[in-house]
Length: 314
Image (tube, rainbow, N blue to C red; front, side, top):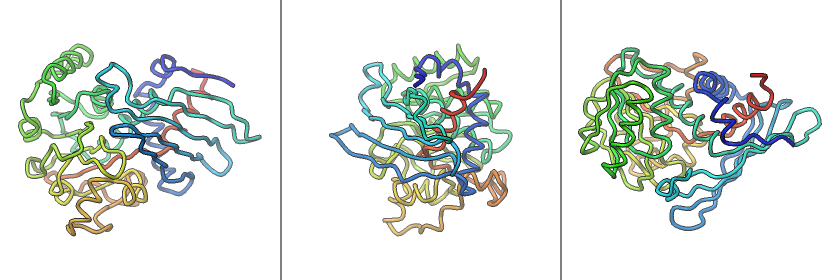
């Protein structure tokens, strides 16, 4: 069995390569060509989860599962929050053929998925990007969003001003962007064209009334029912799109909060990003409209990325 480690994934799974892979996986998912179960998540203790996510790229294509832990305190220790493996099976004889570092695939393809959603929904002239959070997904989102929009300014907010400044300095050097560290989430958001929330917050850190007309927001940090990053007003004000309708209705915390409050129904979900990309569902309808993408991540994104690495000749 082949093993693809973190360094090889980071070197080969570039955003230029990964964004089209994830885009195609989203379309295939929404067209019903792929197979997957809802993620099975086992809480271990406060801030510690164990997850198992099986799926298949098609009835006669590669299949497998991601098995991983999520320890939110790892970032403070300089470790990835997501630790585990992707096990890949080939479609002809059903043999396990490859074991891949799940943390690195997750980090890259999550940013790539937000870039796909941003490209589909954000205004074409969007230039000011705000990132709330300073963990691993902050830098991956900066890299990925810069691939699909001509970003001129990045605004960063984090609970630790020191870490926020370190991230801003890193992005300035790597991506050659003007960077600003905001003192509050409100200051960070009010002038943003694109907002990415990539925190481990359990209570809302952002209010919908702060979003300017025409803004797009990627709600990424909460990956299961419980913790929320944005308030109900953010969800209700926005034209809401998701990666998986079934997944968000079952496990999308911000959506479920607004639904529990009686503010929305399941119909508030306009569609999946794959449906927008295939032309089945209309995305942004005007320059003034606020759009939102709720990301949970689905296994076919991981499997498509893993298969490209395993089968690729680059």
